[in-house]
Length: 329
Ligand code: TRP
Ligand code: SF4
Image (cartoon, rainbow, N blue to C red; front, top):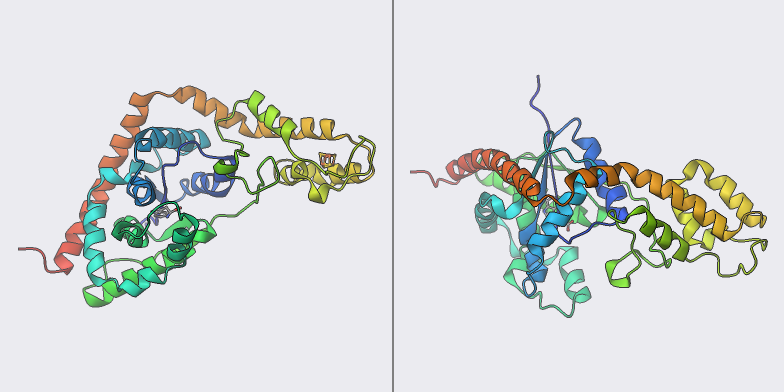
C-alpha cells in the first residue's frame, strides 16, 4: 500500500470557537481524518506573536479550544491532537529554516503589513511576528505534510511554505514534499446583528452555546428593518435570519423566502423555525461536549499522547534535516 498522505493544520488558541469555525474549518478536519493521517496542532507560540503582553489565558484557551475540537468530532484515536509548544523540534526547524529564508519573503507577505495596520494597539514590530509564516512553515514541513486545510487568508503562508521547501530541497537534498492547500469551504455567517461575526462586536454564536442561549440569540437577530407588521411583505435578502436559513435550513430556504416576500410568515415564527434547526444541528456537538464535561485530566491526557505521537514523526524528520545540513558528527 502506498504511504498514507499526511495532513497538518493548526489554530491559535483563542478560547471558545464560533459556529463559523465549525462550518469553515472543523467540519473539514473531521471529514479529512477518515482518510488521511492527520495532525492538528494548537499553535500556542503563534498566539504569543500577537499576545506576548497578555499571555495569561493561553492555557485556559487551549483547554477550551481542544474541547471544541473534540465536540466537533475530532477523534484522538484517528488524529494526532497536540500542542505546538510540546514539540520543541518545531522551534529547531524554524531556526534552521530561518538560515535559508530571504527576509524579503517575510516582508512581502500580505498578512504581515495588514496585521500591523489592523492591530495598531499592539507593537508587532517584533522578530517573532515577522517570522510568523516561517514558524507556520516549520509546523507543516516537520510532518512532511502533503496538504494543509486552511481558510483563504492563509493561502499565502502555504505558498511561502512551498517556496521554503523547494529552497531547502534544492540547497541540500529532497526532504520535504511541497504541501498543497486545501481551501475550507466558506459559508459566510454574519453575526446576530448582521455585521461580520466577531468577538469584538459581541455578536457571535458559539459552538458551546446551550440550546436556550441559541434560541435567545436567534430571537435577537436583526431582520428586514422595513418590516413593521408581521403581514408586511419582507425582503429576505437583507435579513440576518435568512442568511442562517440558507446554511442550516437550506432545503426549506426557498419556501421561507417566498413566505417572507408574501408576508405569510411573521419574523417570530421564522426565527423559531431557524432556532430549532440550529439546535438540532448542534445536538451531536452538545452530546460530545457533555461527555467531556470539562475533564482537564482527560484533555491533558489527549494532548500528552498527541505530543508523543507528533514528536515521533518530528524527530524522524529532524534526523534527516540535520544530516542534510551537515550537522551530524
Ligand atoms: N496561521 C494560522 C491561522 O492563523 C495558524 C497556523 C499556524 C497554521 N501553524 C499552522 C495553520 C500550520 C495551518 C498549518 O489560522
Ligand atoms: Fe427575515 Fe424571516 Fe422576518 Fe423574512 S420572515 S424578514 S426572512 S425573519
